[in-house]
Image (tube, rainbow, N blue to C red; front, side, top):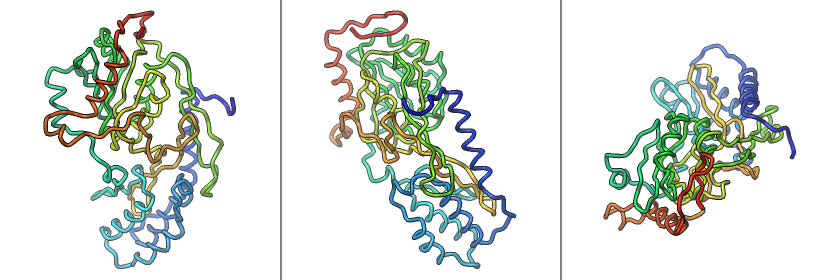
Length: 355
């Protein structure tokens, strides 16, 4: 197996070294509000450290020419901010933002041109008011002995005890629906913690690369990222993971991991992507900049910046929404019902296994 195997501990050390590398590369400049100085600083930071130029076929020199002529000495801070924000939008990257005291630039087109495939009102009709809450997880048992979990934000903590209690609640269920639609990301820690409950052996679940120089293609070799199975309760019965285009960043990472497991089927729409590890820097005028600096690859060493395809592609039907029906949840229930027909849930060595 090529490369050195990375444990979670060494992965943290690697990421810290990446951050220190970037910190040492960005030269400190004296505070100034001069539009040209800040434009040049932002363009250079992105030029030397952004990680998806070739993958997205972006000519950053052309972008310089396009926006350089729009910068003038008479611009106020709002005009400068809007111009720089538009320049960053050329990267088509949801992990890239310019942040000031009065605004934050953002690129939202990664999901805006897609169907929502999630209706909060319809979803509430499935959840009711008696569902359980464990950390950031909301869960209940649906019909046909199907467990249902909604996790709407990977920034919301999920502890090991939360997961244990949730799986105990589902001990008589034949299958499980894990819904991460409209979850735009958060902490990779929770992605790993939850995914580790669905596996039996250690796996390489992805790779990470870091910049080794200022050239657009100056990257290290891919370093393997391993995930070990949890030593606590695991779920090995059939699972469906529900996705839509608003699944981004850590959620995209989670879907990529879950897609590797034989008992898991991804249902819904393509995820939103976002596989660049973001880095924060600062302009001479004090504005913060965030952008993708280290590409994270899946287990096949593929870039999933533009999203992950589901195993079963399905959209919510408008006619279903009018009748308070979530087409994607219904597809998942029917899939699991057929998959588990005749199965009797059993418990073996603290692991739930479908026979």
